[in-house]
Amino acid sequence: MGNKQREKEEMKQRLWNWGTALNRFYRKEEELKKLQEIQEVQRKLQERYPEEKIHEEVLLLEQAQREDVVRLRIEMVEILRDKARTEAWLEGLTEDERCFVGMRFEKGYGFDYIAVKMHLSRATLFRLQDKVLEKMMENRRKSEMA
Image (cartoon, rainbow, N blue to C red; front, side, top):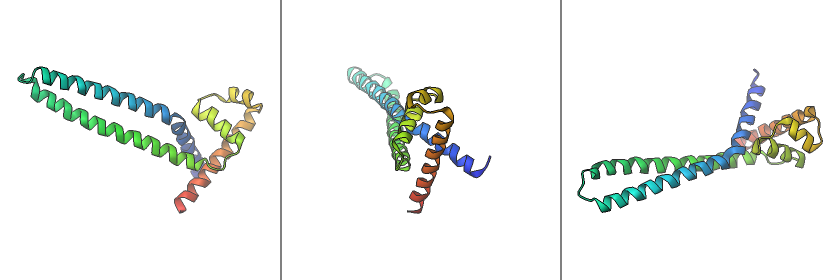
């Protein structure tokens, strides 16, 4: 596979990541909420049974959970940063290109469905995708040079 083809594949993967970013972010947020609920239950147990031997084990669990909270927050920030970076590379797309990107990479629709909805042939969609990837690669180069 040529260098340009590899770069296009990388851009496609970035588009898939971009399209699913908010879903991944919300899943991390749910995970964070569950951890916080568990921490609250542990605090209540500790208040209710302060002299029990579980105190040391609870402290270890709390430390592990704090580390998980930090890890989740870092992952959430990285998801949003990556999404913003990819959006910057999507600057200058035409309305048809934006529509295609949204349907394909955000909603996950197949080429046949998109072709019907946009009143275009599959071949035209593949060329449209190629244009989008080319523009992304060009915008990426420009941003790296700046």
